Length: 153
Image 1 (spheres, rainbow, N blue to C red):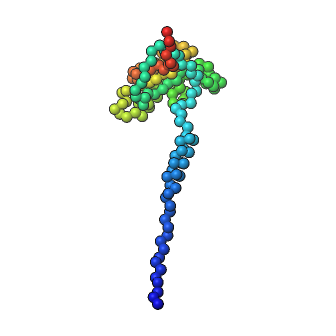
Image 2: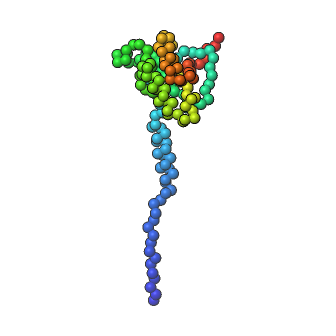
Image 3: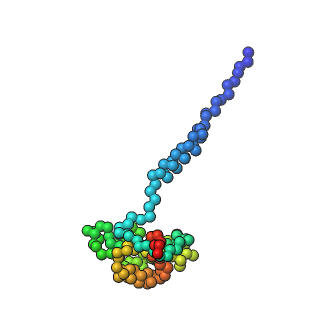
């Protein structure tokens, strides 16, 4: 009689059949739970309506300034304030803010920075003029005034 040799059994590998299902479940979970936000507004915003509108092509070159009365008047007062990147700033700090925003852009696009001002319609012209002067001092010559939909005449 001959002796049969048993072949060594290979350990079964980890099954990867369910791996795509797990990856898609994780992807779906993070897509649902992720919150996309730009900024928390600390000032009131009632944007005026415009008679002429123009759509922008390259929105990556735009930095936003919000001007309006603070929502928390007990902490920040009742005078109109300027908000930039979730922080209330004063007019003299605008030059520094513009330089920081310009430094975040690629070097070829730094001269093309555009400042979009979203101004509450109840704000007087004095604070707006101060911001415009500081933007000129910062050499930010491209300024947009944001508005809502078109007014039918």
